[in-house]
Image: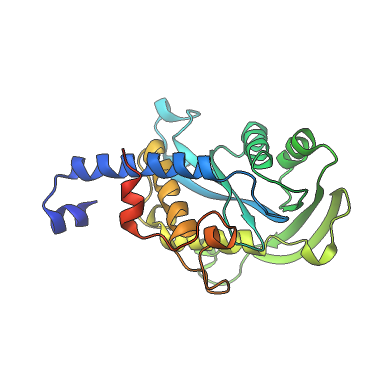
Length: 253
């Protein structure tokens, strides 16, 4: 926002209000059009970030208060169209899983093959939302500690994975969370507030949600996917053209 104020001469509060309006408009628009989607292979994952401060550094009056400390973004991605049909920003618990999975289910047209990581919160949520009308597997990965002098800043090393069939008849060759994990990398590369070991983290939960909505609007409607040669929204037949930033700005108001 500071760089935008320097480039345009607008006040920082003006820029912030515009971003809030744009984030709200993008979230509302995607909520409205992401319906009856043709997805048949869906992968889900969660990505960590934090608001205000990390859990260990929170002042006493902010501890155990939602919107401060760890914040998780739950995402779903269609393995064929690469569309992000739904996301949810909240905690990493059963309540968040319930809301995320139920809203996701209501956006799908067909029976899907669903793959998640080993988060047990998914089990009850998927059973309640889909019943038996889903082919569901868990991909449980095992991690070990990284070695070397920089291990403190390195992510854990994946040492193996186990596939667990939970419901239905999922096809083994499609049991994967690779697209969801790659989408998480795109988020970390595209949104500085998700970048680790920087001072660009979100200071307010609400602004964090607006930034995520803007990111997925650009990802779904503006960014041409390398393997598709079109945007995910075009591949899913939600739109017939590549959106530009002027069209996104026109959603405001």
